[in-house]
Length: 170
Length: 134
Image (cartoon, rainbow over all chains, first blue to last red; front, side, top):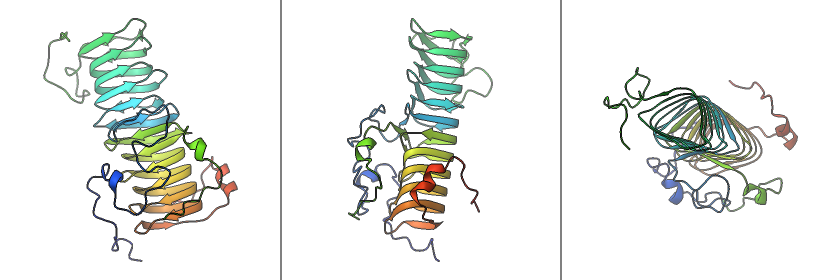
């Protein structure tokens, strides 16, 4: 069989996400005609295709890595790496959360390494927080060290910005 | 393509209440993903996926085994699918095996796979996946 020679599909593979909406293929599945604005309602808020949402019902065992934003409402057993990472209320991460900005309203058992960290009133953090700029709301639980060393330490910090002074006014 | 009456059980209403997880196109996940809701993959997943409903969107790819009740594949899959209802869209590229009870394949889908039919009962006992990997 010449499986890779016959390719009748339209040459639209360059823009994978946007083309889903207006793909010239005959019939996207009728149940979900539009990927984003479809009527399905759930805990997952409407989001652009680039943003990743780990819903309450999802448990991931392993690594997540993205060059875009990640919102976690479920459970992750492993490291998370994103640009802006939000760990929602009720969510659980066991591992290290890396990002430019990390907002925690759920539970992290491990470590946070981010330039900008926000611990909300429902946050429960067990482990160290490596940051450059941190906000802690009343009610947050922290069992660990806060280290204003983001970008200064070993090569672990992904973005490694220029060495900046410890406490930067927001 | 307008005959999509492939569901073997009434789930249309149930489907709307599924929690939807969304993996954006820039994400790479290595590991096991487990959900009783819906999972939409625009990015790359390496590992095993268990979901009630999985959508591998165009541009998305999965390498590994997928277990679901409904599987809609518009992207790439290298591995095995175990799903009661499988839909392969025209942009799908499949390598491996597709275990299904009902299947729809759109014209243009690239398939290099065996597609064994199985009775519905087969899919209820998939805690241990068979060793069929070649």
